[in-house]
Length: 152
Image (tube, rainbow, N blue to C red; front, side, top):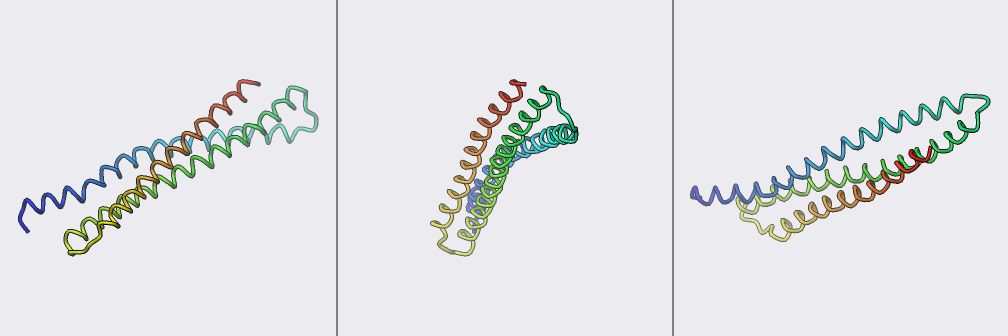
């Protein structure tokens, strides 16, 4: 194989790596959001636990307890979507990585993996798209939780 063919082969294999990098950047944001959400959940759950331990609650404490329960429910719903976004992004990265391996195998093993390459790459792309859709839904949930917090 000539050097120009080798360089071209490397370019083909590296192309999905760009998608891996962009997916990893999205994933970093998703995981940060998930971590912040977990911290917020622990904080609100601790506040709820302290209120529940009281034998007698004032009216404003009853209202706060109900509000906390609604917020915690919404936070769990948001956690569900963020978790799914993280899993979908990781799945996309796996798809892009496998497509790179398939491109390499197609070039150097004289196989005919073209349909698999396209299919796996598109599957990876669909996973990243799904991750973005999950985050759009989660963002709507964030707004609902903020409105609940504002109501107190």
